[in-house]
Length: 137
Length: 172
Image (cartoon, rainbow over all chains, first blue to last red; front, side, top):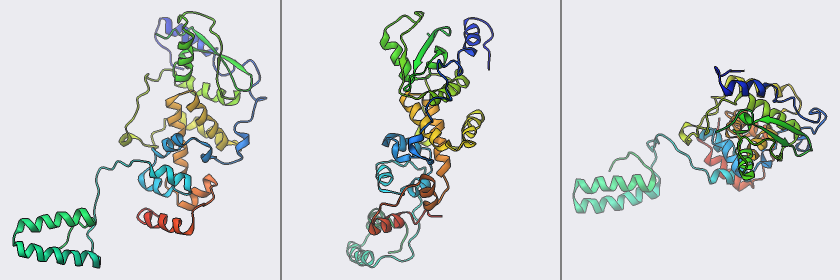
């Protein structure tokens, strides 16, 4: 036990040594068995939603995704926010056919407009609409 | 100001009572509010007993933790989402929890202490026990998590397929 050097607190702490866990008026071990009604496992669904969310807040995003092992935990995670330092959008090898068709339409429009600025705008639109980070026009 | 000689009597859900120093109860938002609501002078003793919805065996563990952490800073330093991590549990706390591992009912003990920390509004104890639970399932596969928590899969086949698709990037 740490002791404060002098003063009221030391006296208080000294007294407190006599006031801690063994001062129950009734025998502790003869009392209730902790959580007996829940069986021999951690009854996570017995916790209120905010406590489950609190537990999940100490887990990585990967673990939180995997922890959606039933409907209630999935629903809790759906309402959770994730804060990440960065997002890496991987380069797409195969552009989906519907995207290709849309790109061709846009390309024709860009060719008609004939300008590099339009191409940059098109790239931006593609990134936002289809999460494609890199492609060629 | 907290007067260290001031004592607070707590009565448990199963009828036991214990008298503890205010040095311990100051970390419990619930008990501090109850004392404030009594509108008594800090030096006034004895106080009326504060009833806590926690059984005696669990309260004993809570008081053991409070005794060790009586000098912790107040107010409790809240951490942002970015600062939260489960691998920074102090050594004493780890040993405190590991003592339960020798008991058959250690899962229930953890459950009881988490709910007690929540009811008594002891933020440090709540964080520590929630981190302990998080550590039990961190890094586990879906099936391992389901086994540890003993949860049945209640998804439909379609829902399960969707979950697997969403989890494809993080399945190990």
